[in-house]
Image (tube, rainbow, N blue to C red):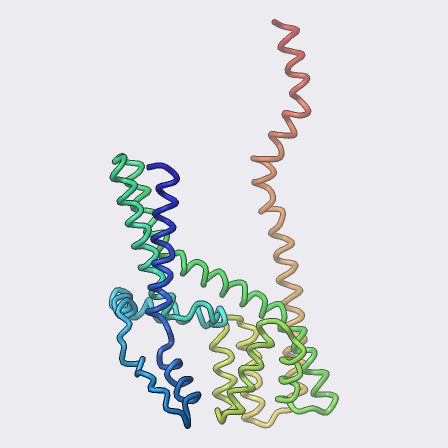
Length: 292
């Protein structure tokens, strides 16, 4: 098939897939609640959209094992639950992308059936099926690295606020307000959980559960123990901030020691050959000319 034909197929299949994905994974209960709040006092005659079964979402959930769905939900929690990719859309996107890739593979094989094309037609749908997982997992890893990097500075800021006379939650609010990273967002969410009536210990434990950073988990455990036994929070913050700074410096030193090993293979396979060609190439050409 010509590239024009492939472009026409893509122009038809991709928008249709996106439309079906968006329609089937809408938050219908949330939409119904919003319409109900907006329609108070007015007779708009809205229909009950919550009774419309999302067919594609139901099929995708049946095809997805429960343990795998829980793993996806965990990755989304570590990634901060981006609004553009909720769990339902992620579950629908995986088989939809694989189906589109499989259809394209069948069309591709109908023109030329070879072993290489068959392998490509099998590998590409599998890759498309796991592509959303890779994107979410990569986002989660980067977000947790950002939290790990921000933790010492945030603890120092909270320690300064507590020593200046603020309470622990006020210090968390100030750190969450003046911070702009994912850790500030998590602190703000923890304060919101406390404000809506969630017990402090549960809110702190939820903060640790939403992260895979061991330093943050240790800080949460120390805060919970201090709140339970009446230990001064300033001492806890001072010790935790000092420990976090030491660990950050140790991680930086560890990365610096690993750097020569990581640079060694690109140096051997890419830089040294070019350097030898530039330095020894003219001499080798002259030697060949002299003996020939």
